[in-house]
Length: 300
Image 1 (cartoon, helix red, strand yellow):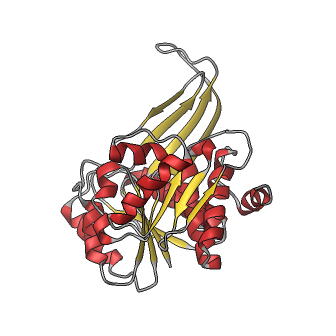
Image 2: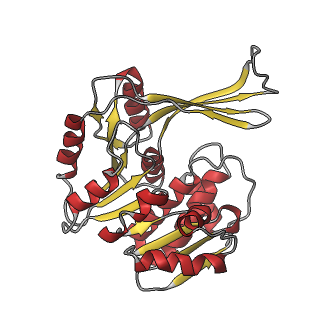
Image 3: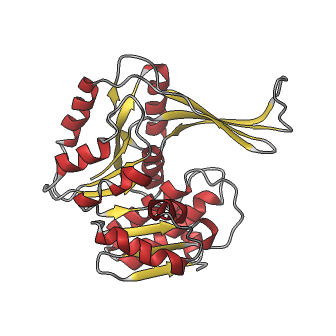
């Protein structure tokens, strides 16, 4: 079974406004409401690709109820902890001459709520795959990634991590099955600028030396690099297409890689599936679907 964890899920209110003007009344010409959060995106794309998953995390209030309902509409399983104080955040994503985002805070998460999450994690069994991604809200201990991985250590559970800077580097000692920084995030870890695939490879290997099993580096229009647990290096340019929306592309790459690996057990095919899935989301207003991914796989 696949599980995802999103610590601070959201309702994403996506709007388009022609020629936005601050301080004036503006009217939308497009609007959509979607469940948001990196792990949420992974679960939705997995469902689109034909794989069941269970989304874990914390929700509250009427917005939390809506997140659950929308997730079920995408065919996703959910097992959220409902917290008492506050409501799940609403993130406004406005596209006009520029892209502007206003992100909400989210509910108050207590130690009791955290204990409930660990109770749910205890239900995972050997061979299950857990995907932890995204930031940790300020109402949670900032070492939540480490706590989860330490708690599950030695149980045969494969854990994928999609996080930045310290959140990522601090869990390498627990040997995550997969990590997926982008080239900019990888560069920030080591204090360098990485623009080409050739430049990325030695630094991705450094993360392996620190404990990661498989390292997947997304590079937007430059494609991606993957270094397997066996040391094999896979590189590919990005499929050709028009960038429509970069939000969720990295999450889609994680979902595509996991789906490809579970379907074939082949790292090369999983890598290509991940790259095609990330690109399919980037080329669409919505998250990638199986037909879109398969169509792109025929092009590179």
